[in-house]
Image (spheres, rainbow over the protein chains, first blue to last red):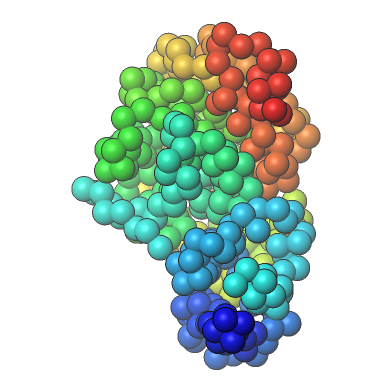
Length: 99
Length: 268
């Protein structure tokens, strides 16, 4: 049983690949080509995403990982400074914990 | 992302808690988008309510339109959206120009509006925005971001600068937005404002230039209360939790309950 659960969980790298794809869809391939997206990338400073782009990204996360992951609820507990400093790895860890 | 095709326009819409007790529709301001509510204010209201957020035409992820930015056209869009979602009656809250859209709804379609909240709705006879449109340039945008964007604590990078510049160029030069806004300059002097009978909450930032506009509305709308909170015109970004909680308290309380009873109910 433990083995089965283990197999269905995505690794950090797999989650990163999915999120990377969402970011590309939201901000466009031509911009992503110029960037070096890593788990340490921050949404606003490094990726230059604005709030409506983070909305689009959130909707993709919800649609992909299911309603069990309350991504908007998790974000809504943060103040603006925390959202500005949010890094991709924070989201990867949150999704992994929810699995 | 949900985009709803209305007869005249395709609008980006987000819904929270569709099973909520009543519906609250939130209208954003000019040159903004639904993200102003999405992260904090909407989730607070969605604890009990069905919350609907949408991007106005030409804004956010909604379809671009070359005309129809006046209050009549904007309220036609909102009515079509309510019809499309099967919402007969809703509470309505609007910020800045969205506050004027909310007021216009209450004057045109009072039977479809329950309570009304106006956040930082500006008197359109003060045509400061038009002066900005007339003198707009990319240099202005860079100057504005460098000097004033601290109030929202968002520093825009090159891609965002280009994206915003494209939006302003489109809205200012290719659409009727300027003349549509100018045509609304007498809206606060319209008799229909005094005839609004909905319970109305007017929220303004105490350091905002728009406070006199709030006082005008408070004097004209019979069932209104004016609430000043710490902040300026950007108060939904500066104080999202306070705005969310005040809206929640306002929509939740019934006329029969006094303030303290409502507090007890909310906190229990």
